Image (tube, rainbow, N blue to C red; front, side, top):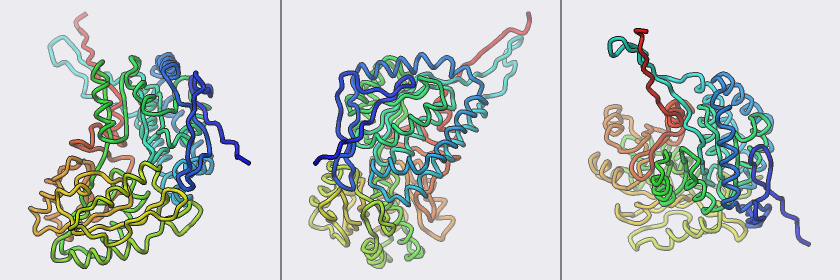
Length: 479
């Protein structure tokens, strides 16, 4: 006897729809490895319909007062709180994450972030109006861009959707959002909630694969394309968008250095770093997965970190003792396993290093030491529950190793020496530097990187500004 799969649908112009040509893909629960739903495999006709709906809805949404858009976003935040358990259930099916941690670590910040951008809608800033030329007054208008094509990733499907639609809608834009093909369920539920609050066409969701995302970015209607994903995907989006000079907002990969100096409390640092490295199965662009430790405490640190890994548990969503669930999909399990299988002879697996169980895509908390700066696992993003450890001799070498990768999203420094912390925060070439902590984010502060980690900011007033354009208006005051 086979179980009938739940049917997810696109949300276009205020209506749920199947793909125009009827194509679907199966959606897999990574905790079981089994299909639980189907989702539209959207094609050009579906993208065309969503873009037309967003374009048609844009003038009226743009022309609302900021206070009216704020009111709508506050209603969305309230509705997310009211439907929290439904959102959690959808996200757990999407990702296999622990239910309790999804409830405590994702719903509250999501709601807070929507409320932050609701407030930002009423805080449009520009330089002071004035007479910079005799007889003429200049003013600055800050306006929405237009239709925004947005592609969200599978590691935080709900939260990354919020990071995209909340500033866009607050600024007066309309949205066509595509979730990852492996995690559409919570985004489709968001469409149901948001669609009950905003006018038809303001918020649209199309599901599908890379070709769907490519059709969105290449479409002539959007004025901006925003993606959170891999470096390769970001480069493809930037290249495609350049053909008609769309704005591009890219939040891509990371390889965060965690620089631990000799004066650090090892026990406290290991506790915090292991949490920040293994949380969400290490599927986080800012995860604390590349640790650089001063040679004088290296061995003790590795021993303590390996024990922390051995004490960390992965398992099914309803197990309250687990820190993280499965990797998101079979390809990701293969990628993480491949990094460990290809380790050079000089590397040593101190803990983990293997798949857990035969059901689902679980991988053990893993610690690898003995690595060199040019090793593959140091230079490339693993995106799994794997923490590497390197040794450094002095501050200069720590900086060299930390900056010696192509990613530049986040970093952290662990020391009791305030002057050293300030020196390191200056020279570390990353969009964020944490000191004696790693991974906390707040709505008021920007998140975004340099180099191949992309450009543009999420969260904060800077993230809001990315969804606006600036217009100069000059008028004669002499009649």
